[in-house]
Amino acid sequence: MIFLAVAGLAWGTAGAAASLVFAVGGLGPMALSFWRCAGGLVLLLAALGLRGRRPASAAEPRRRRILRIAATGAGLTVFQSAYFAAVQSTGLAVGTVVTLGAGPVLIALGARLLLGERLGAGGTVAIGGALAGLGVLVLGGDAGTVRPAGIALALLSAAAYAVMTLLTRWLGRDGGGDALSTTTAAFAVGAAGLLPFATAEGLVPRGTHTAVVLGLLLYIAAVPTALAYALYFAGAARVRSATVSVVMLLEPVSAAVLAVTVLDEELTAATVAGTALLLTAVTAPAVAEARGVPARVPMPGPSAPGQAPVR
Image (tube, rainbow, N blue to C red; front, side):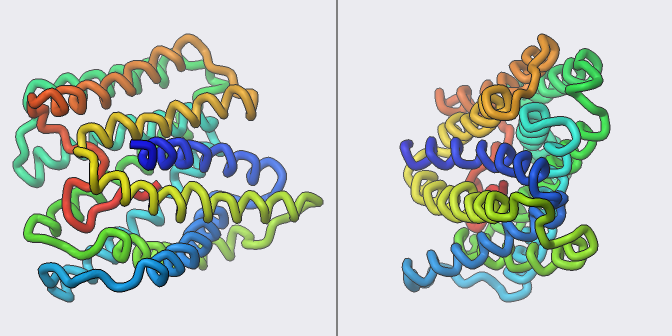
């Protein structure tokens, strides 16, 4: 539980660090996503080397493994870039909450339509609550703090995460590879895919705060990427998925706290109300599952072998 809590808090700082990079470094979301993937890849490779080889489990067909890595890498590219762009457009608090609130809802709908999983009453309530929360944020928020373009980017980020999760869930029905190895390979695919866009946007920090920007980039690659993943995998292996989902709500909470205390973002009444609705929509089915009442809402977490949340 401690590992999961630290991972959730660390993930919540990624957007705050990104906001500071945007403010003083002159980098855009594509360049930032590239450096996160590249730096995280180096550190995850080191972690794999220190961990050593694990006993082989059921072999995964090569074609399926390639498809899993390619899909995860492509989803990672869109997910991270759109998320950072949403933070840049509409702020850390709103961008994070919309992305993480809409993700489970889109996964639930996709699982119902594509995988034949039943929503159930809990899933229906969750979707209704999430839609209500999004409506309050978009329609009731101040135009200066909640921008439609930023909401759209956050929804794109959530959709990319949902597609990635559903595909890995489908591919993992008959077993899959090691999650850390798959994530490391996905970071390599993501870095390669982002490189041309990041180059066009500008890879090198600009301005007089180069040392600060390099420190922030190192932090993003080390703490909310490599360290957070290592802690998440260790904790999620011992805790049931419903509990993992609830603990991971520390991510949007920590992001909102940093948005107000560090970045001086304003939280209006509509923003607070919409955030509360979204978080409640995500929490309710997880609590029901923890009590032994299946809510049938696929939540972020290691629900399938080889599946890993990528933030």
